[in-house]
Length: 318
Image (tube, rainbow, N blue to C red):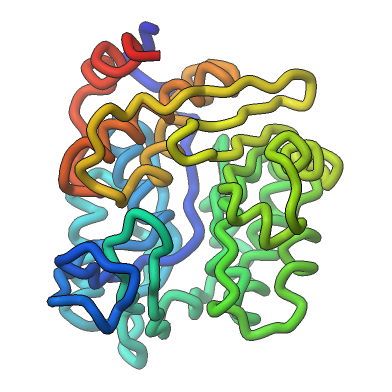
């Protein structure tokens, strides 16, 4: 697959969501109490996807909030150095940058969030309109949906995105312990109608819809109003659907070195492909290639090399 080396800059992607610091266990374990130590990393899925897209030459805007502390300032600096527009990343003098302690695990990750600044973004209607002007995609995860303050701000972004015909993409990463509402699942499901793209895992889908087959999960998302569905299947790859046909995009990983960053890498590939006018199936191949690149080396959010180099290496395996 050959892709254009120059993406049309008018087709920007806007990310609304969490900018975090991840403290990840230095050893593989399913239990935080068995961690031998922790190493900090720049985190927050939207922030990591934004950096990867900027590496690939795309116009990327990050909307979020960090604390006025060493971690917050370093996060903003890292985003800026990678080429992300950080004009709408706010620094809060009264809050600390949100932190997450998590395990390196090949099965079930354990995590403890210590949230503060990430859900306190405050923007005017005029600023929201300006941010979304000429955008192709608005991306958000479940994190801002979990708190009333950020949820209300997100609703304003979604309303304006629909007004400006911006494609809305939802990373349905359901985590029960993040929620302050007993109606979490109902709240998430209400957001699906009119969404252009979701990329849930089987575990996410099971939490939302109960035990079903992968094909049934995909159909359920479509019935809820989603246009394109990429259901990740772990080692088996991803089940991709545009509502008319389904296709399995196989995993391209040969040697697992790192268990982190695959999902964010897949999202980056999806956006890169879609912005280059690839269809959802071709874009998913690019996503699978970048995910494999992440999993076969350390550094879940390190800068990506030239996209054609990644595709030349990994698409031969598909």
